[in-house]
Length: 387
Image (cartoon, rainbow, N blue to C red):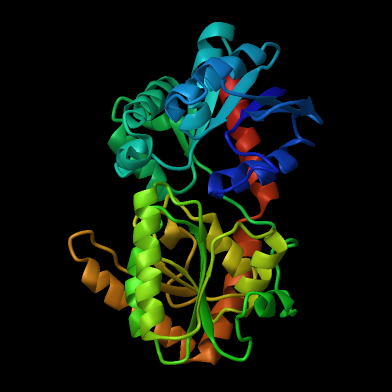
């Protein structure tokens, strides 16, 4: 089976959960199918072909540049039997390849444009183009993979023209041999984090979706002495970045031990930061699944997260962490709930350890990438056979 895997992110350029998903999925798919990865960038080799936006569009809206990459990818899929796209950045490439080459198009939905209206701040008029590209591709796709049952429900709610039988659920995964506890503390000390004091950690981009402002407001109510570590960078817009910096300064004015790490750290360093945290916090207001929660669980760390999207399918409330209800209409209640849940975990180290141990067991048993790859190939086979 000759498969073209289409993605915006691929090593070494991975900055979000979708990129992590494709990186590990590709690794596990290679022994199972004839795989060729098509991604952004320049050059080719080792089963990877890279495509860049047309130079004539340098300086143009990013959405227009994306569409030019999609055309390049679609043209390069000659000889593939199936196209599998990830995110709106490559969905249109898969759709065009299906029309042009007569091959099936499968797309994995990691998020949905209609549920991320704040992207208009980042893309401007390009948001209308990204929404159009996603709708066009998803409604015509031969198969759609949802990364959670909650995501499947969202897909069918946003796109009622899509036949429900086309939408299968294949959860995201985690490599528990890679993500495991690191007893070292050199990374903590390098970033001026006191290993003898408890801390909570956030890892993610500075976007509306990730809900970091809620965390920064909640952190004002954390137990005295608890450190707050923010591995946060790549703001969607200058305005969001400015709001984040102002909230960080406000928090620093009320407590010590606030550490903001704006650069993207190597995976090994993130693992150590996750390992020693009293809790990993995921305050997302929208999250189809949230691979980073699995990463924290695999490192043996308790998770405090918002009860949105697919997160409850990963974090078992009261067993591997604590879930906090979120309602856009009452942000103050959400922030108070975050602070309360974090304090509960920090103030009971024994319970936190038990949650961390249970989280690692759950990650290893239910979310292995080998399982994800096998289930993905089953989707391919069903579509190619017409069943």
